Image (cartoon, rainbow, N blue to C red; front, side, top):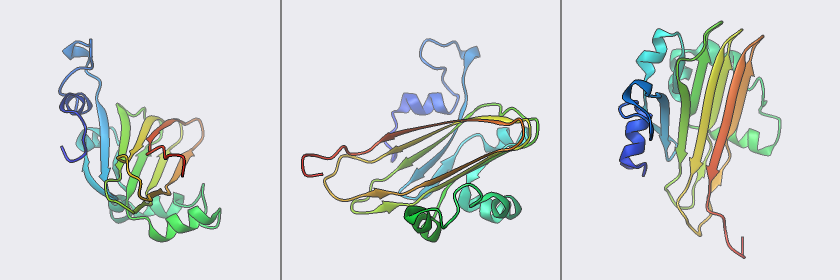
Length: 184
C-alpha cells in the first residue's frame, strides 16, 4: 500500500492472480524486492528461490549472510574509482538488491526490484549486484520511480552484472522520474 502499487498488480506479482487474460494454471510468478526510501521493505519468494539454490535478497542482508560472494564481486565491474558517482555510491549506499544464481541453474522465475523515492530533497544510492555463475540464466527487471516534485532529488545507483562462462543475464530497467520543466 505504501508503495502505491495497485492491488491487482500486487496479486499478479505475488503469483496469487494470473496475468490479464491468463488462466490460473498459467500463473507467472515474479519475485520482487521492494525498496522504499532506501530501505528494503519486502522480498517475495525467497524460500521458493532457495530451493533452486538462487539467492535473492537485499544487499544489506547479503553482506551479512554471504560475505564471501559480496567481497569477491562487489566493485569488480564498477570500481570505486570509476567515476565521481561510483565513488559517492560506494561511500554511502545503504541498500539495494543481491542475486546469485548457482552453476547450471535457470532461475525458476523472473526477479524484479522496485526502488521508490518518496522523501523530498533526498538522494537514493542503491547498489544492485547480480552474479550468474557458469551456465546459469536469470531475467531481472529493475524499476525506479519518484512522485512529481519540483524539489531536488538524486538517484545515483550502481548496477554490477557478473555473468560467468556460458551464463546469461537478461537485465532491463524502467525509470519514471519527474521530467522537470523549462527551468530544469
